[in-house]
Length: 156
Image (tube, rainbow, N blue to C red; front, side, top):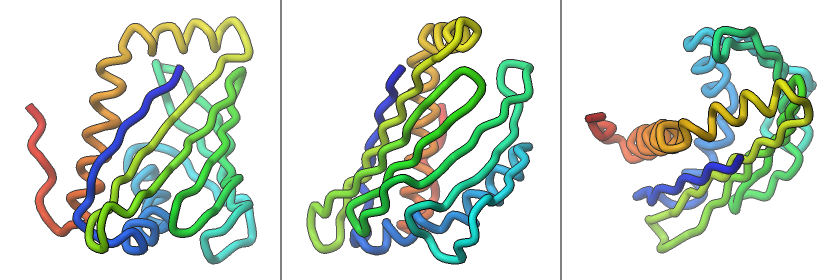
């Protein structure tokens, strides 16, 4: 299953990349949402090889997820691989400078099941594809608003 979202941000590409690679902020955000996050690398700065072990609840079941930055290409983007029980995935983040003060952020998430139970979970997500895509787009809009220093758009 693949989900793609994009947003144009009124900020220079380097500013957007710096905010995207502020991993500590994302770690704190996941913890506030109920996840358990453990850093599994020795890096103090964003780089290829940074990794995490994350535990969270999804569809009433506790999930374990291992994440690792497998491509780090400042300021054009990065790629994160994800491995979980019976699933493999990747998140590709691309930045394109539309002008010196405007950047397009595109995030592509793809998850592939490896087991029958994972196939059933992915199938339920496929049935809710529109909702999953809208939630991802809303989060991206909130992120863009935080970079631009404005209020995020209201959800309807």
